[in-house]
Length: 294
Image 1 (tube, rainbow, N blue to C red):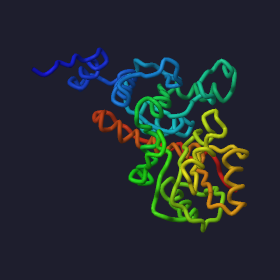
Image 2: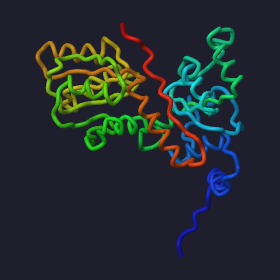
Image 3: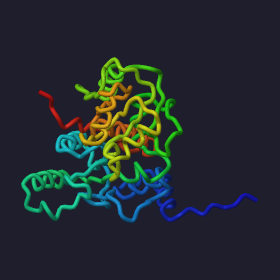
Image 4: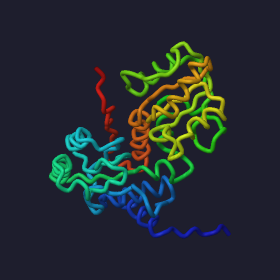
């Protein structure tokens, strides 16, 4: 006789909704199913994955996924008639979305009023996407966009190292412009420099997760020709690679920025969710790079 698997309370609630499609999805039931399917349920007692504005009981008319709930993204969600935004990064300008510091701030008050006037709930999905399970869903989206999944190497515990068909820094910069919608790309090294072994540290990972020397150690122990970085600190990995290049070593860097290196993950989330919520309108809205270049 096969063993009987007894569903958890969360699984029972999800199944109840699936088999009763006339029941409206609420913000909380959407959150519960996302975390269940992504990670097997919530993984962290302390997390920045919180509802930053709105109500968990609100019925969901549609979902927008995005890197950051900027004012333009919020307006687009309203235009689309969707009232639930899933953002990867904060709404209220600090890592934990605390608002004690800005209760009388004009930008905070205007943005919050617009959200509340239009009945928008915003939930942040950061920690669980990166660390909640064996798959980093932000990297999944980036690799899908670049079509690099087949080049991933097992050198590190994390999806950092890739061995690609030999190319040049200039050609990689053109690829990123095309695939990631970038107008300009910062590089260290010659555009003609040959590249085969590449490291990718998306978002703040290129700052070392509190260990400044980490990006340099990753580059050295994995014999990398090039590092594709999200954020940079100019006296760490930037200076390290610049010295290597000036000494004639075959090392270079391509800087994507935090937003461009992670936005594709939220694009991937929209398609991932649509498979699981076929009765909900779900779309990705690009927060876009925050800078204009003169």
